[in-house]
Image (cartoon, rainbow, N blue to C red):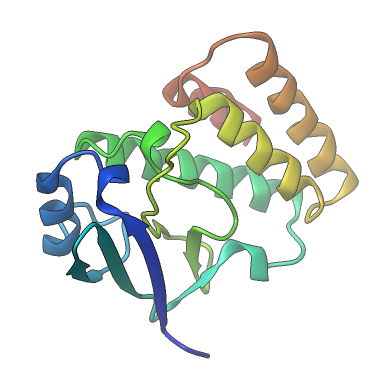
Length: 167
């Protein structure tokens, strides 16, 4: 399997130049290592994915595994936030979330989200995708979390707290 992913996007989607510096320096450990090539208004990003697989390649999760995985995803989002990588600014889905073999460590491929979609909407879509990869009990819990994100504007910290209570 190829350990490199190439992504191209416009500089204007990045927000500000210092963000690219932080990505290249590897300041946030929840984002996979990156090297970049600047071409006028276009950025080509090369991610090293060695030791990680995209989440979409995993096909079946038990209830405890899916809840644990969601908790780790939310923790990774929190860590990115500490480095000013806000969840509205990058795409969060099963293609951009990478996990190690034991499903213990989560890392992202940073792709700017030009739509700047709200976190709750992104997370709800992620949960709906993950419903296809879990047991009937897992689907029930994911439906409850989906409903929670639909009804109230909930932060990822509160959401992580709720998920932790289910574990």
